[in-house]
Length: 506
Image (cartoon, rainbow, N blue to C red):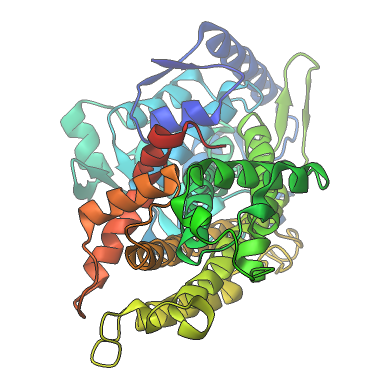
């Protein structure tokens, strides 16, 4: 069981969100939470105005709330803020939200009771997933609407997915013998003031992007062999003279995958001097995307250790601070950067697809078809790749440069971070398909080079692809085959096969 304390890693996040490892609170976290709650109770007794404790919210912060209504204030907050729309987030996004909100509260600066954090963890451990609409957050004051939807079921309101069925939360709580929580002063605000929807989206994207980066390097190596391109651009001296870490990693990966290539030896004496940029500059382009995502990872890890509440409750110093830690700008900029980085992986991959399918560039049969003319081969797969990369260019327009005032201009600058994260996920999905098309094209092209064998890593991946889809000897329905390659990428199977053949990829 993972015990929440002061640190949470991406590996922890993966084990809980995708592996469903149980979660509890460490003794030190319990102590911190209880100490902060005791201070909040003191503030309630003193009856001095504290934002969100005994005042209204947003533009209504100047409205004082009577002591008898403090519990109703917190209940009303969740009910009134749960007005999201659109398709629900996936269960893993919501599991991530539950974990990250519990982690932030466990740091002990939000003023909730231990029971509130434990109830969030109950939902995680029971795989009781609140239904959270994906649209409606502007990414400042936190992810208010998504978090309100996530926390309504704690009170027995809203809907949950339990054992694959959407049901009223109150009904499921009764069936499980769980009493709905009655929120006390400050607790409703502490539950929804945070960046946990965007942070969950971005953390999950990073986990998947790690595999996509390695697969993109595999695709380059396969395309290099398919096009009988030079191996020289991947020489370690190139990266040594321009020492960006991502570029060095891609060069090392491709070199490793190309080891012992018979195809390379077959064209050592050809008169070709240079290859197209999509091949020759792949380390520079893939490497830049790697470095961008490394920065995003740093931002996400910091956010996972952060208190994103307002007001912040500092029991050791005997004070509260009304500030802006809920503002999603750090994640918004990072998500836009991630989307751009992933879009570029697809952008350059589509150009390599064109290199392989165009007979004037490849020296291979047109569109890699047997009997070109009667058969169209992979012609339309390039159309699809072109459509996807063009869609990515629209999606890559940064959401974080937009802002629109909310709450009667009290909240006059917002991050649009959740929109940025959702767009980045769409770019990832599009890029996954583009890489699948490149891999299918490269496998087909390699068939025309037989009996020459490609590099060891390339050959291992080629053979794994051929276990799923045969050589295209005549036109057939290709969509299901490309979908199978997508799953080989998504699950990390192609990376696993490559690493078995040549050792670990960076």
